[in-house]
Image (cartoon, rainbow, N blue to C red; front, side, top):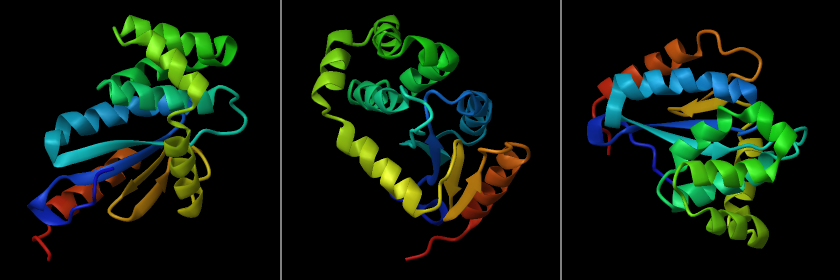
Length: 175
């Protein structure tokens, strides 16, 4: 996981607490893309998993996203699954394998990862950390130590993230 940096020493970290069966997280991708376009490598956008109990395929989807990250395509995979969040609710795990195939990833490795649970600890750790810092819904953002909850409304969140990122990027380096 990336470390948070102050000032220009490195990128500012934006954690996006997300759930891949969440249609609000799919909507939030427009903001994530706009932030990427505006800040480039000055903003390190980190996907964090917060599967919600009401979505029965979210935990498997988080594990699959970790397998995609292990294969070098974590965000691409997350975005592709989020684009089909409603379908994931109906189809379940076969959709996760299908998306892997569509992206040219090793789908058999995805199937194995979902069976052997090799990424469960990462997902469990994210979920526990999210609960510890007060994440209750998705999407939730953490930047500069501030938690911004987008689970009820995403109105104004991108502007608030930009305000914090601009402030952190302008701050002088601190030891």
